[in-house]
Length: 181
Image 1 (spheres, rainbow, N blue to C red):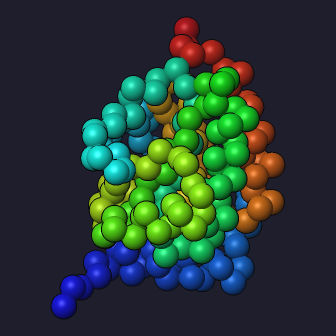
Image 2 (cartoon, rainbow, N blue to C red):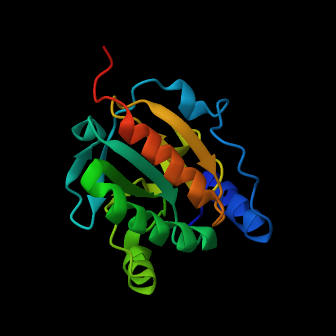
């Protein structure tokens, strides 16, 4: 019998709770642990071939990291909208990476088929990095990173009214220079 890690249960509970009532969008969560990390870098395996992806390879681009799981209903709503944002802003230097925290990545193909999702997926089994380093407690969590690799905003949960705020943040971050002088 396989046990489910406590971290996954807590994230699951947060996801279930928010399906009833999404948290309010109040802007960047300046108190979120990820905001204190400075320049963010990590290496994670990509789905499906497990090729290593290094976040620092995206310096000079604005990056949205979305932490999600196949069992999270709000994730089914948010990820396709992020794919639409990528189509719109990708040519201007915007990237999206979906960090999956499922213990078993075997659930991912069914999710991708059902949602018709085409975003690049990174694998963080059991939410190890998402929980211990990024401080993720709610599914989904969107983390916006500037061109220098710094975490600029963190949004927990998802509701469609969040999208206009995200678009504003993306447009503002894209206007910033690639290197601070």
